[in-house]
Image (cartoon, rainbow, N blue to C red; front, side, top):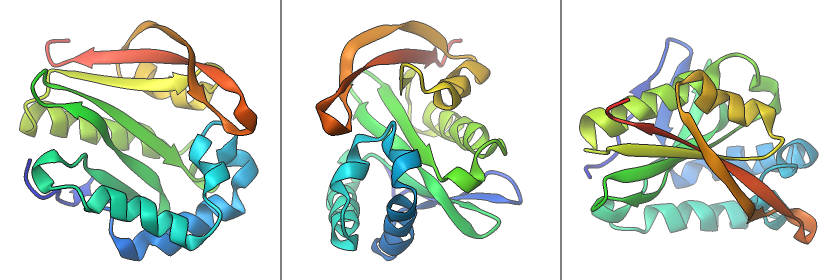
Length: 181
């Protein structure tokens, strides 16, 4: 995989490869929206200081380019709005997963649906991917509406598939889209 490039989704939405300089924006968003983001995102509870976010970004960037899963910051009208990226990419089996989260003020503007659609196009057209999956916690209606809106197929539910904060497990719905769909 080549170095990730910036993706202009619309005039208002830009996906830019994550950089260490994004740490403050990411941390500040998490820190000021703990209740909103922490309901579905396990990492929120463990993100206590900017250094935690720096460590996360470093863990993404310190992987060799050919093995790295691309992670992008989402900017809406020039402001940080969230993160999106590929995860658990398996080049041999031509499959990947898309993960995402969006800051509360930017919900219900179509930002994430359009951003996911851009990554789908990138995966199928440039990365030689055949299968993309998206996983959402059962009950996370805003998150699950995205794969449904984009024509993903519901495959099933992973029982206790993710450990949320306070040591609570949640079931995870699995959706997939094939290049041939």
